Length: 174
Image (tube, rainbow, N blue to C red; front, side, top):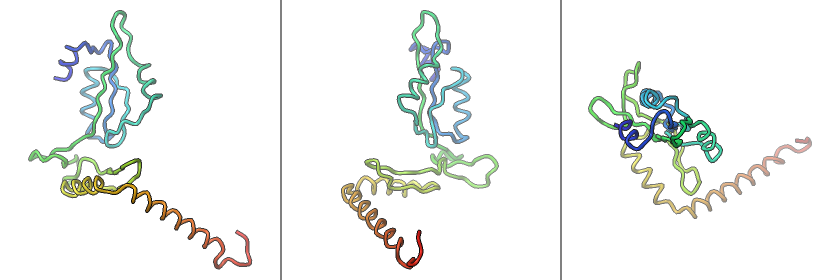
């Protein structure tokens, strides 16, 4: 359906560049292969979790790869997003990977940022309820207090390092 709708809008493989930003997990390979079967080789811009990881320079590079079809405008078909597993019962978020005995989460890489501060970074997936609680906790944080605590921790770490630099080391140089 995507190909039909894009064709209706004038996106043709002969004059469009497929730009894909999906997770690098093997679950996404068949999806990307189907896109490339229709649109040709993709310019890849994704990383773990489907996070788009390029800035202006990367976008400019991608734009430079668009096919030229005389008389047709250059077009860019951008497909981006994370992956989601689904088990045999239709439950989203879990799946049975090939050659594994038990279901696993679709993506075990989870980080939570707010105001540019890393608040959570753990390998392994969270159950849905725990993920919801994490999101609620991140939203509820007083970020001024978080910044204050970070500054206090940094000052304390600096004082500890200075204490170590001389305590018990008399009589020799560092």
